[in-house]
Amino acid sequence: MRPQRFFMFFVIAPLALAAVGMFAGCPKSFESQARHIPNAPALAPSESPAYRIAKDPQATLDARLAAVKELTDQTELASVAKNDEDGRVRLAAALKLDVQHQTIAQGVFTDIAQHAQISDLRRVAAGKLADPALLADIAKNDGNEDVRQAAIENDKLTDQPLLADIATHSENVYIRLAAAMKLDTQHQPLAQSAFVEIAENNKDRSQQQLRLRQMAAEKLDPQHQPLAQTVFADVARRAQDWNLRERAIRKLTDQVQLTSIAIIARDEKVYQAVIEQLTDQAQLSSIAIVARDEKVYLAVIEKLTDQTELSSIAIVAKDEKVYLAVIKKLTDQAQLVGITYSTSDEKVCKAVIEKLTDQSQLAGIAKYTSNEKVGRAVIEKLTDQRRLSDIARYAKDEKVGQAAMAKLTDQTQLADVARYAKDEKVRQAAMAKLTDQTQLADVARYARDEKVGQAAIEKLTDQTLLADVARYTRNENVRQAAEKRLSELAAKTK
Image 1 (cartoon, rainbow, N blue to C red):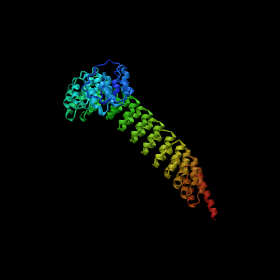
Image 2 (cartoon, rainbow, N blue to C red):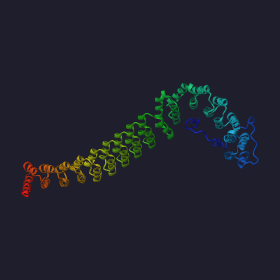
Image 3 (cartoon, rainbow, N blue to C red):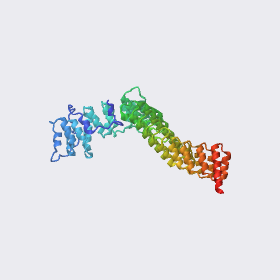
Image 4 (cartoon, rainbow, N blue to C red):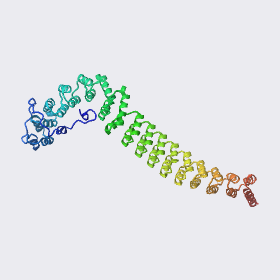
């Protein structure tokens, strides 16, 4: 029994002429006994060259089969199918006959299925028969398992009691499975019993047995799905044939099993097939992190929606393409900001900034970045005066602080910058923009930088405020500057 000829799921029915052509060079199996076949139509007056070769008994079998392959005239094909003495040539011709000549074709199939000594000829003929009674007889009595299986798989065989008997009692597991697959609803308990028995049989560790177990598992009803999932997982792990392995993966729904298969396999095709099946966000993320492969990262990102998992992948990968793919899918402002703390890649940071709308989060980036271009990109999006003031005072990069300072207009915030900014140029720039007398007085009185305090004195014109500065400041030089300024103003008013 050759399991690769099991047609139901995994093997395509043999191509007509190829199936016959493989017998070229074999001795003739039987003399034609086709007198019961109806007369073939009369030949056309002019025979084709291919027809002359096909019917020439002196030509080699290979040449005759090749000639039949070339024939298109149905009358000539019918003549070869009816009259040739070699069953292989007759079968090749019968397989090419159209609907109008099916009476002749069925006669040839019947003759070959019943009388041919070569089992592969009988197998092909049995697959083409239209007589249910003859098919039933072949399914029960032919001496070759492949031929019996071909009869069972033929759509014209629908005898349910017969199929049930074969599914129950046949010693050949392939034939049992073929019969069980054709049982109707009434016989499903019996069919399920056969499928369960075949699916559970893991004692035989061969690849053929894996294929059988996969086919049986696919037919299991909802009640037996735990068994089906176990079989699919086993096939997905052990199958050497990729098509079979992929089929098993696509049948698996158990998220943990799928993840385990991908992680153990460490194979690109397995990763991709598993990722397509996974929906669990944590399991998807774990595959990407274990694989550490750009293609796997990107495939996982396509399916992820969980903001934390997306961010984690980007931070672990530290790959520009992965970062950018994640950023496209992130909407959580905090997670977006977190990415900027994990990389100094300017392109990545700017992509984050483009998506950020939260002024507080934007300000945090500008405040702590050491990349001037990134900081300036943030400043362009900021409008909140308090946030700009905070950046101006404490920015890690002094040029970023200066850029924030340049956008400040609020007098209270300017005063805070003038008093507390750590960068002297920023303090002086703030002083240059201050005009509010009350704020100037506060700067003069409390500024840590004496130069800033004195600069504030120079801009004060309110004598009451100047007197307060002179009275309360703790800086002696500032006090003296305030008193001097008061004297100057008093002199001008006289």
